[in-house]
Length: 391
Ligand SMILES: *Cc1c(COP(=O)(O)O)cnc(C)c1O
Image (cartoon, rainbow, N blue to C red; front, side, top):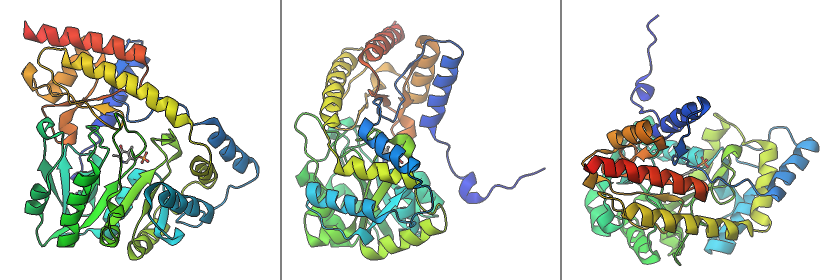
């Protein structure tokens, strides 16, 4: 049988991060002692009070369809979060709860982009953005950056990339995969260009709460009413509440866009899981003290890993100010990222993600969402690997 695959799917690249993760897991299952730095999720458990609220909802029979855009209680809790933490006023009708931040990104791109449209994406980028743009039959326009500029684009670079076809600019700060964080002034300047040119901003703020060294997060929507009107915020429960498997995220959008997303969701996934939403209400409205401990752990691991990476021959690493990734430059080793990661996994049983997956072939991504003992062991092995290359 010759199965015809639709162009939109045939053109997609499979997720390399998921592929590396399954390879490492398969090696582990064979009894091989693999150290995995591929994880895109916190290694901490979901806080207990959130799990309990979900379990109570399940026990009470909260197991039926909810409104496609989420339960009113959760949409209100999200609106309250944006008011309280970001100074942004959203009506619950502007909030759409979806099956993860990734799903929110997809919905937004589907609601706003079509054939002939261009979407500006700074590289290194989260690998799903360009693929989603292609699914919408639109064209990704990639703006390269490097560690020399802390992986940030300039307003001039953004301005030069905008054409009459530009529909959307995707901003992700703090960033996956680099951990880079734009300052409020830098965010405002990028927002100014979009406002002037009438370009919408998809602002992926899922790592908002994971910040180090005094870095601050300011949403691009918060600088003026015009910035607000040009911005769609993406957020979710995966990272700051360690709820990746719950599949819950949201977007906060201007009313007409929220309406379009509501309709798309109503005909595709319908509502996000009912009882999971009850847990999410408590995640937002309940205590946030779990974060302090997590940030302390992350800071310690990041500092150790950053120093260790910089001590290796041929490796340089910018110190990330957010998320839980480091993005070392491996160009001094003479290898490109795919070969580097394949050999590192083969020889030393250490899993890292090749930067080429994020549009940056001179780098690799290390997630430090794993315990300190693992980090010490894995980086000692990586050091041996890199020293071996130099001989
Ligand atoms: C993890 C992540 C998301 C959302 O993940 P979900 O599990 O779908 O909520 C969105 N954007 C970036 C950049 C991420 O790293």
